[in-house]
Image 1 (cartoon, rainbow, N blue to C red):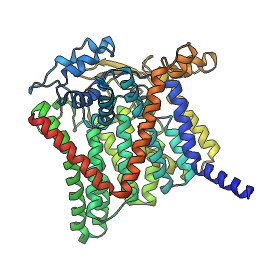
Image 2 (image 1 turned 135 degrees about the horizontal axis):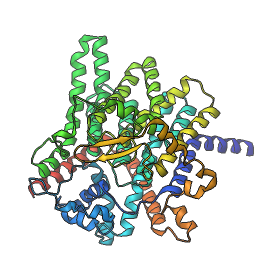
Image 3 (image 1 turned 30 degrees about the horizontal axis):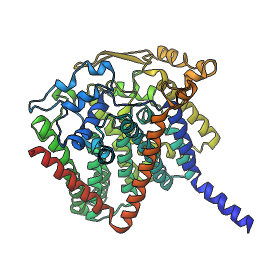
Image 4 (image 1 turned 135 degrees about the vertical axis):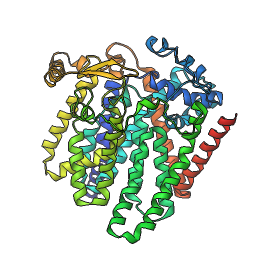
Length: 515
């Protein structure tokens, strides 16, 4: 009996071992890196949306941004962004509203139970920790998808490597008020729903379109995930032209669901810019005829090869997946290729003042799948795969800790509106990069520990009270949200819950429009 119980315990631990590994990596990263205490730059605008909706019941952001100056850096406050108005009289805020909508439940709780104004340390500490947990959830879901497509071991190594080798780590722990972690989570949910539920039914197509709409509310380019429906429909039509009406119906239903959700964003644009569809950054922001594909891929200044090299074996894995399963691999590959084109077409293809090729973090689940397929295809032993993953992680850690500070790879000469950059040569890039490696053994504290992180505070006789509070409350909030959603989904179809939330969101935005 004892042996049987021991075997059951062993099997239970092994079944959960990947998640325990992911949680361990997450905790180490949080202890060494988490230093966000308040929003900065773009994060101020994302947060101002949520605060204005909850605290003021409107979208007049001037007071919200002005209040933020008490916690932001002086450099941000000197720009007086609250005075820059659009033609409709609203503060110029060219950011998607979806991230703010996701944050609203927590702010509502804070408002109801504490009468907070939104900028207290206990509110901001939880708000900063929530995206960190959202990133962890995205990795969990990515693993669940990848292990159904490829071997469990390859999926495990892929997720563990991606946790340490993409710019998402920066936006989980250093700038969590940006939209990247929420974008990664929602696109992962889109891929997971598409993979698990591939049905030829109107509810599936409308539901997937609505999920993609939710992802596009967070970052507009996520609308390209409609290719999950479009590419298989095209393949189906090519194989049998008689299926064209059915394929067209699938696409139209998905687009209809997508547009229904995007009504929220269209309404916001109407409120702020007087037009239902616009590019808030200006018409010159995107040039579809001359994409900067070479620097996007190969520039030492935040190009994918030098700042996220794991991207390339992941793409090779997607090509291999296309050969094995065209209707699965091709949509994922096309999304990645289209993301390259979209990002290359923007003037600030390098992501403005952000860290690394940050916009590609939206393809987290796809990159996890691609890299897992790549590892499985080359039949690399797990010891060597782990070693390669460690090298990817070490490379990214140096960029994470010293890249922006030391301008590794280059710097922006003129930021706006020309977006001119100066990039280092390859040899200079590696000189700057490898020049920080000796700190690993000479000064490991500087190499590993970010200023104001929990470990930094502990080692400097400071107690990270608000960080621990935010971590605990955000973790509990996410667990309760997951548990409640799981219980509700047993009683009510998920699509009905989603539809109800979307209808409420659309109604609120229309009320704000005519208020």
